[in-house]
Length: 198
Image (tube, rainbow, N blue to C red; front, side, top):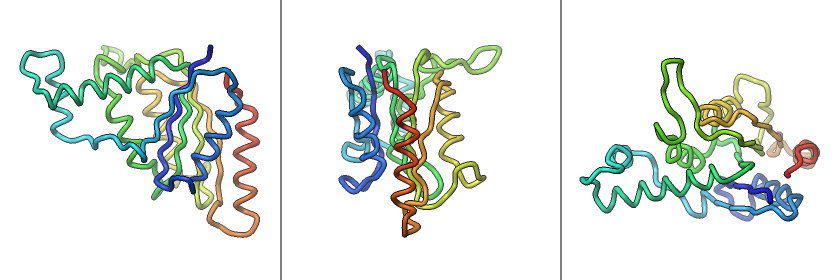
């Protein structure tokens, strides 16, 4: 049975185009075991000194109850990613980059010695053998331009933890009126139709 981890990150709830596209895409994965996380509906903590300290204290006798709770949350998120065959990410573009809610997820799973390690030859990602499909929605047209920070960021951070098989589906010009909305959504649907979920 195929295992899928699906991540929503839109703040728009039921009005989210990226979440709707993700739901429709998941419907094509009959028989798959799906773990869904709505990172906006159930937000994760923002990386700060207390979280970094918790990671540093992990496994020690001096870790506090609060720190252990953070480590436990991080461990759960990492295990979900490691257990999945495919990670499907709904990533709308907000102010040229990914939503804070999605970055919080990456900040909690990027842990040295667990999802990546430093070697004498550079960084080695430890979450291997996975595929990622990114559904990205935008109000304007940014694909392939210097304004598109979403694609290079996600390719970089996913590659950093070992996931290099990454495919993108783009729904662009969604705020540009006229037929742009329908055309943008159809383009994403057409792209997703070629990216079969096992």
